[in-house]
Image (cartoon, rainbow, N blue to C red):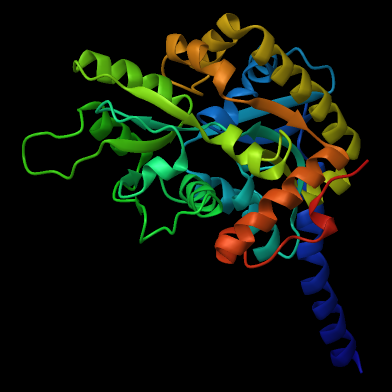
Length: 344
């Protein structure tokens, strides 16, 4: 009997100790009475709205929270940290947020959309492209994932069959490599492919235009893909490329902390959009982009935003529905259910 009781107690300890450890992880994250919030922000447009919050955090300006913000370059690393519980709040591409939710059995919630469309069609050889019909017979280079899916949808919605009427190539795995190649001009020595038409996001557009000028190459910005997307949907604000998410366990343990974060983050986004020169300096200072001068020119075209609640859910649902029709794997295999959306 004693052996059976001992075995039962041992089994209970094996069950309860991991639970206690998880609880400890959520609760014991205070320093000097302030709740520590671990944040991962991506560099580039998806992270720009975080700049003022990062500055205020560095100056210990928040009464009840200490924000530790780490800037990452690889969205996959951010995804892994969320799944493993190594970060509390993170900025992500919207399709990746959907994927994380689906593959983690609902371990995260989306708090707000932070970036609308920021993709543009460019040429470096003087080609005139006034409509999608003008892309017939051409090859367009684009970064993989979101930019390619968005371009494919727009082409096909405007009567072009991708692979037949127009070719979309992802030969350059890194967006930076595509930028560098495009800035060299349509043709270069060495037998490389002609790269004359590309799709790039801001602030890459501003950066590559300046780099090309240094090579005596003129870049022309031919088409705002956000505007083209809005034409299809019938209203603005429907192309949503970036967002901020929270781990569900952290939200449940610290709901007031998350609410205060959202207040601070919304203010930070508003600051970046209305104080571009000052914000650009903070963007460079905190490692969100390399050059303040480029960031300052790019901010007005980055469509940095703050959408939450019903507006966020409506925009996200519409966008993810389109992506599902293009490649369901890109959003984790299916549309996320209502549990994905943070609603007060």
